[in-house]
Image (cartoon, rainbow, N blue to C red; front, side, top):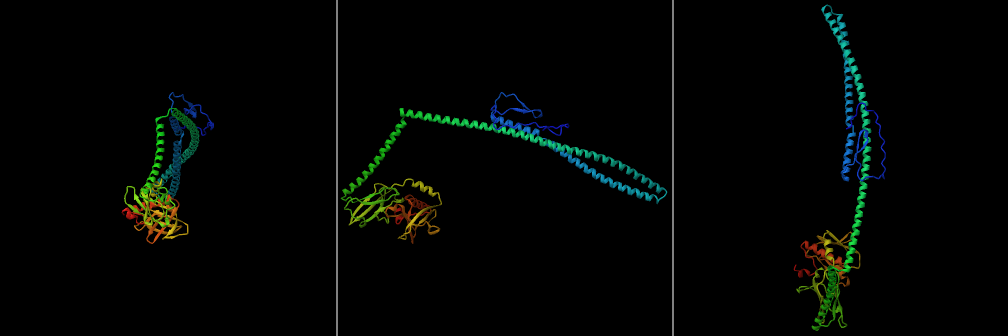
Length: 494
């Protein structure tokens, strides 16, 4: 704390503080080391042989500024002056009360003397002497009271002088506090601005060093990659040889797969020839979920398919029993998720002659469908845009858009805000792909919500149709319900 002597003047001459320019350039990268001496003069200190880091310099300067702020504060001195002023005011109040009490005493003494004077004229003898003695005592008390009043007046005058002095001193102290505080704040703000400029310069320098280092690293990496490329061009490594071999093997494997598929088809044809069956029909279409298989005549003598009895079957890939697909009696059949991993077979009967056509292998799953369904399972309710093509076996001419909701507990069909059907999963509900229906069979499904209500729905794509079937069966299975098509539960053992 700054000590203020009694001969301290009322006004303090402030030294002019030059403004610091914003584009100042520091001669050194370190914060200047200085101390504040007498009369607030800055004293330079000789350089420390030990070079400190930037963080240590900033921390030390911050501590010095805080110490300087505490040293320049005279708040305690102002508090003492204010306490003295309060005490002087209290003394003045006590003197006023004493003056009032003294005036009352004068009045009482005057009344007592008048009473004794009146009593003196009424008595005689010894009593008269006693009254005169009492009057003398009252007059002595009056003299003492007058002397005391003089002393009180003198004390009052001194107290007033002291109060005036303390008030002036308090005002001077407040003025000094304001001036010192303004000076300290200005000095602190200048120091903070200098520190901020130093920090900004350091950050800019650090960013420039990082950018240059990153650029040098990128150029070095490019040079290394170019050197590796040149080395690999002139001296191929074992890894490149293995990569070339793998590519060649993949190409050979793809060719072998195509050749194997052709051989399987030729083998099937040769078997039919050995069994004395004419090659009248063949299955056309990709054997993958999301496509459709179609019976096509491959001979001019093949009878029309409309005059033949057709029935599709599914056979497990391990050579299990043949399962009839109920309702699949058309020349076109679109595999559904139940057919994945199984072989499909169709029987064509004409004039008692049986012709069987079989897929070359099991039906393959659609690419990416599993991940798509797993993403939809996380939702509580999934919506699909559909068109109702049939309702209760009757074709619907309108092609307005409906919304099929597949939820965790139920399925719902809506048109706008109106609900057409809403049913919880149960043993009476049926859901499967449309078994027939031409080229659009791969995008349609059959849904029987209850015994008296069934619809055929056409989806926007094959993926949405298969995803809706798989999602509904997944949610129904969580409710201990096996959701399948007509007569499919018996073949599945439910």
